[in-house]
Length: 312
Length: 259
Image (cartoon, rainbow over the protein chains, first blue to last red):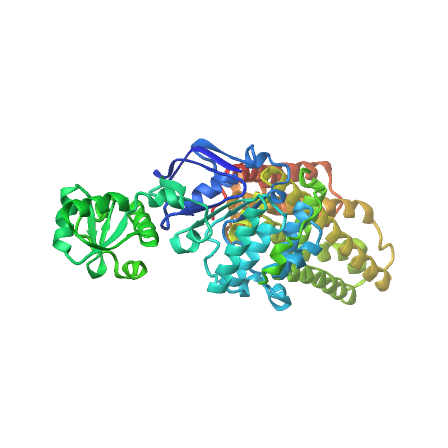
């Protein structure tokens, strides 16, 4: 369980985190999404007492993190996989932490195996590890104390597709056993497959949060018709905002049923009527995290070709 | 990465989940961190090797007056006197320079406990290194076989304990004030020298012995000190050890650990 109330933090006269309030329940994976510099890392550092909020507070497992007697045994943290002494061997880096939190040394080997770091990698100095290896070492480190809560900052960074799939399986399993997971990413694709809930942060503020379905209700419906002019007229008449998508499709910000009624009233035949799903979420993420001046206009804004490809 | 192991997670015993890591364990962790990096390991090896080398050279050259315990110790303590503080600085600054502080202070959120453990660990290291040094000196003196070689051995060993441990605490304090390896090392070795230049001006003639560490601490490994010399050492250490330590404690407990 992670709970924050109005977390606010200024750095160098700039408000980097502003009034951030959320709650992560046991048994769930929460994706913390936002572009680089949106305030994800600062928020996570405040959760674990490495930074002090100017106002607001954060609780983990019902109390302040710094009041946990042996925090490593209850909360697993991966804030920066590269934050390891470059002259220390991989296994030794884990062994030092295992010693600190009072975990038997055998668990170090078990976790090296779990994250797929072989003997050669474990004996290498961290300075010689690739980013992917460091990320795996970081996972091993976060899981070392057999925690109930995982807080992971950009954990997918540097993982190959197979590692990404492994990570999702690991986090899903962890949550299904009753654990609480908070993981951040600047890439929607990395977290949406595994996250039960998502929070989107932009400019230091939480722009939207909820389950995937909750977030998607606002994100629209894909509509296709032979008579595009008629469709546009019908949508305009019904007061529905529409965006022109690739291949003459329309992305309409409304429930399918409302669009169907508008089309029926105007006598327009629809070829396709489907929730926008992925593209909708991607678009939502983009819109919420882009500053007002750069936000796309409501009408006639073509969907990015790559996103449109995902619609097919 | 196997998914089969995920289905059967590795559980550890629940004992210790709600127990704060004891200060003894934290000290052991800090001692381990001194020697488990490449640089840290070779720094300690070099200190021991240089100490032994100095003893051998000192006992093979010069006359009988150079082969007393006091004379050999005076030279043999220097490698430890210079190199141990480097380990002391790195013990603190590597948490920032190597960014391991993200882990250290997340596992032990009460930072004053970490700093306390580092101080105790550095004191243990200083005493252990002195034991090695005294052992090597004693072996060398025995082999050289000079007359009345053991004069003042006990008080000199005692003074060397103060010399090395004070040097270590000063190093940890400088590390804690600057929180960056290179600036802390430069400050630790260059500041007292630069300071010596200032206080050598005739204007400060009366003050110099009280605040100049080189003059105040130098006699510690050379001769049995008088009460005036102890007073000089005390004031110099208050300025160069205690004051930085207080500033360092204040900084470490307050400064944010940046990612």
